[in-house]
Structures are given as structure tokens and as C-alpha cells.
Image (cartoon, rainbow, N blue to C red; front, top):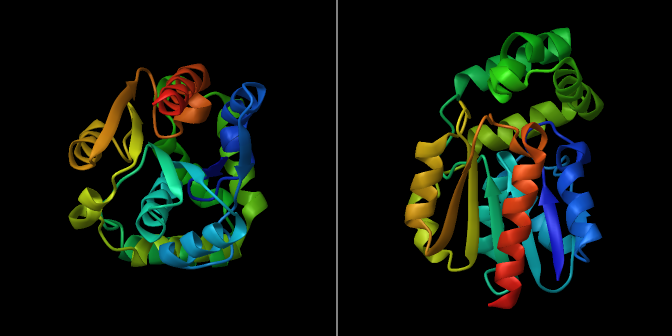
Length: 232
């Protein structure tokens, strides 16, 4: 079985580096997919499914978690499990503001927007080291303006999964941080309560980028869940 990691908005493989190292060292077949070329969640999901054969376990953070829900609905027989980290089933609440962000990035580039708006939302105050904050900006700048526009449009256009969560029967790990101001514990609890077979974990001293802010705690929760699923 392939373990596929799907990143959050404007993030690259470095978002999951601690987790991929941990799972690979434990014998799991891991792969990272960058959903950079499409401007809708369903099309991103189709791209991912067409890129792999056989059964898959999907690990997605934030936007990646939204794509994971879509994949589970598109290919329920292929998806054997889910880990949905710091994510949401709800429709986009930013709407017009995202479109304003696209305009700003097209005119000014990415760095200013990230320093002013996005970076402070992503990382809990106690975890805002220069190294981590620089990494967030570097990942976004490496992706570039075109990817920013496509991923923003995908998030704006997405529909709510609230009425379809009960269709997802796979075992799912739902993980959030206690200081996640983007997709917090209330949202994670909603996911866990409305999926058929979910386990909820809330990581302490952790914001939206749990995999980088508290990598050991996320590694432990993910590996424990995967091993339990294997033994089922």
C-alpha cells in the first residue's frame, strides 16, 4: 500500500519531512504529491488517483486534508485509511479576500502577503522561530504566483463536505493543534463526530502547521494509527 502525503496551501515536501522520514524508516512506502497544476479540489483528487495504482492511505494537511476527503469519496474502494491534519470539511469562508490576495500577489509577489497575513495565522506564537517562519515563506516562494492563484481558486470554489462525511467509511485519524487558529479543535471534533470511524488527537502547544511545529507528537500519533490499522 502506498502512503501518499498531500500538502497544505503553498507548501512543498518539506512540510512532511519528519513524518516521511519516520514512516519510511518503519518500512512504509511513502510518496509526496504536489497538487500544483489544477484549480479545483475534484481535479486535484483525480490527478492524484491517476498517478498511483492500487490501494492508498492518504495523509493530508489543511488543503491536503480537503483533497483527502474528495479522494475518499471518488475512490472509496482504493482508499484504505486517512489521516486528516489541521483541516476542515466546510466551504471556504474567505471568498472575496482570497481574490484580493491573488491580486496583491500578482502585483507585489508572495513575501509581503505572507509576512503580513498568512505566516502569523499558521504558526502558534510560541513556535515562531526564525527558521520555521523563513521555511514557510521559502516554500511559498518556491511554488510561485501561478500555484498561489490556482490553489487559491480551488479553495474558493470548493463545496462543503458536511452532508457527505457519512459516506466515508474508512478509518480516519483527525489531528489538530490546540492553538490552531485556522482549523481548530471545534472543526476537528466536527470531523471526528461525523465520520463513521474516526480517532481524534489534539496536539498541545501547536498551531496550524502541526507536522513542523510538533513533529514528534505528530509522528507518534500517525505511526500509532497506521500500526493499529495494519493490525485490524
